[in-house]
Image (cartoon, rainbow, N blue to C red; front, side, top):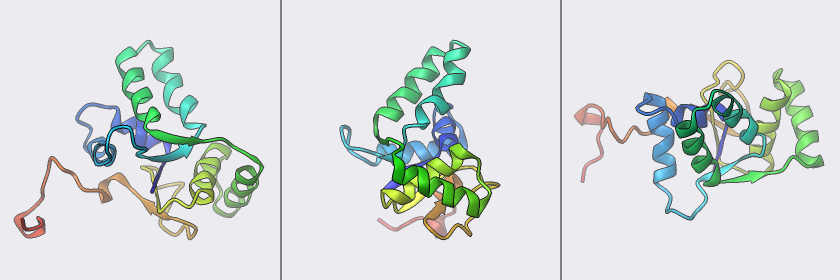
Length: 149
């Protein structure tokens, strides 16, 4: 199961964004009605405040649809304490620590983020995955890297 950071969701809402396409592909690989992954409930304000503020209704609609495909996890005492521990260990700000702690607490396989500065691969508790690590269904790559039918 994938867990998502806010920036990965935001890029996915930008039409044609090269990293966003890869995140969208994760959502499209899951049957409609099924969860595409998990995230902290803090994703809601993080991804929706700016587009709502500037009146970007189409962007709000896309982001809201993506959020609806995620199981949004509340910040309970367990997640909050884990966020404090991970935040201290990795020098994270509170929202980033909560996103990471949520992913770890629910047992996600990987944490999808574009934030290389705050989430290096050296984080030991979960596999950190950047969108450019994901398959780009619109760009099959060189023939030698394509899977054979």
